[in-house]
Amino acid sequence: MSKKRTGIVFVLLTMLLLCMICISILLGSVRIGLGETVSVLTGHTDDATHANIIWNIRLPRALAAVILGGALALSGYLLQTFFANPIVGPFVLGISSGAKLTVALCMIFLLSAGKIISATGMVFAAFLGAMIAMGFVLLISVKVKNMSLLVVCGIMIGYICSAVTDLLVTFADDSSIVNLHNWSMGSLSGISMHDVLIMTVVIFFCFAGSVLLSKPIGAYRLGEAYAKNMGVNIRMLRILLILLSSLSAACVTAFAGPISFVGIATPHLIKNIMKTTKPQVMIPGVFLGGALITLLCDGIARTVFAPTEVSISSVTAVLLVPVVIVMMVRRKKEVH
Image (cartoon, rainbow, N blue to C red; front, side, top):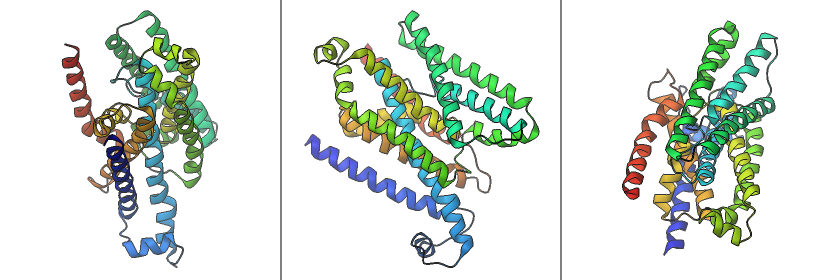
């Protein structure tokens, strides 16, 4: 029955995701019908304007939401596994803010010199910032054994990084501010197919690495002693969890800015839907769930107040904070 339920849930999530991608491509300030959209995608149209809108604006944005949303949820799941705590995530621990700070530094420095940072350069800068922030969290975790206090420390690190980023934006040149403002609030606008290709390569590596680690992760979640008896190299597993989660979160921040609460709430939602904690199920499950949630939130962000577009983080916070609160309350009751 469990396998049947899992299969049904995967099919439903995949169908919902495909439907959301189609809806996302159809939505926009310029009305393009379903028939015309199909014609554009199949190359049977002479309307250059519609082709440009779909191929260069809407399709890259929809694909980016799927890839980056899945990556963010995967990063959250790996971090929750590492810290054995369901309320941690890249946004809460300050990892996204650390990535945001280093990307902002690079963007301001290069833009002031009349240069533009490449997509690969942004990912590298974000990964460096994410690793620095993660390093501080790990240093604190050595001294602080209380997980609630560790989360608070992670939030404080995030606030410091965000404050420094805001100061940089305040004193940056006007041209730099224009480029930084939307990105720093969390947005999927302006993503190209070239960006989609780069993020696909990076996230595929992270996803494949996570799938290969599914059995060691399953043993690790049952306790360190059990994992050691099963032959798991605990030190190496922890290093890989940090690298994969930080790289996933860094890639999201590099292209879309910080997106809040997807990494925390999605693993919890998928666990409740799947009724299992097996990594072999959870890893693809959280990726699909994160992709679906991010695509939905992006659609809301760009259509509800059209033509004004709000930041995607504002939408994810409104929709997912209640989920996190309920999760924390339930966990508190379980402890007592």
